[in-house]
Length: 352
Image (cartoon, rainbow, N blue to C red; front, side, top):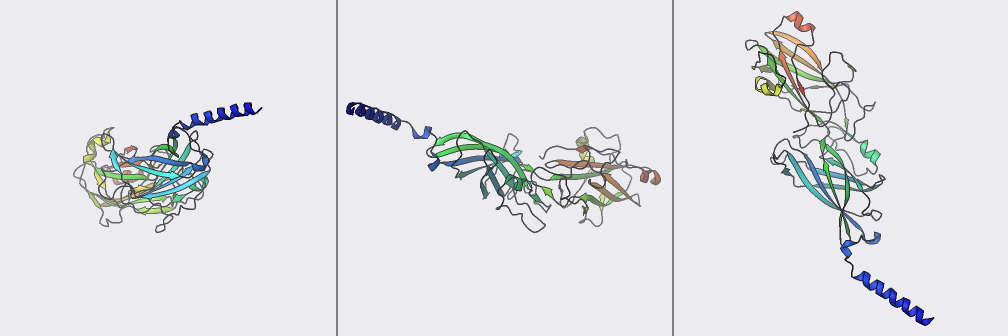
């Protein structure tokens, strides 16, 4: 009996010795000593090639497990953004953070939710995030429109999944990439005349049915949002804008090709909160007129004052809307009776 026990003991020692030769970096660390390291690449479109101070300035991350259980919240600033791509139209930063997560193993995936820049709860109060611990709380967060300092300074959000990459010592490495998209739309207005001899002065552009707030993540049309506000887009041009450009022939399908024949109307804040009430494009039959964006233009045409209202299509986040208008030479009575007093083209590209 003693002999049998002795043999078994030697066999056990041999097995343990064999295990000691294995490389520790090839094995998953035990739960007691496990640290998750997340390497995250964040990419967004650039409005221009990063002049000083134009890059996003705050990164916030919420990390959940596969079952949407909260793991941690990360805030980072002073990140270095660099142009990427052959044309330099994207900018990217890399963020590395360590996560204490004993129950996560390399076969699981981490869910990553991203907010860039500083959203505001009202015109002066930054939105508070450190108490957000559930996915429902995060997706319910809203923000108001403020004066942003460029396309890269508006609130942006993104979602991604981190997957296992490697094991280094007692660390499990997860990698992820997220594309950040802007939570606002951008509007540009262009005007021209039908004939060069006409005199046209744009007196005001007023945006109506403006939402008072928007969602950082998936938009929801509900009673929480109020659509009764107005915005004067030309508040800084009390004398109006004189239009010297003209385009006298039939407008081409590619309106961008004759862009130089239009005058761009500059206004302080070109950004719009989402308003998903509306159609995909301009239509003659207006649906939900009490909820959707409309634009009132007041102008002086050859010495006479006029006013028209244009209903905009559905306004969606991360979209750049360019509205081209041409004032025709027609009689005053006919001119005031129809909504087709403009020739317009709407382009809806992604932000560039």
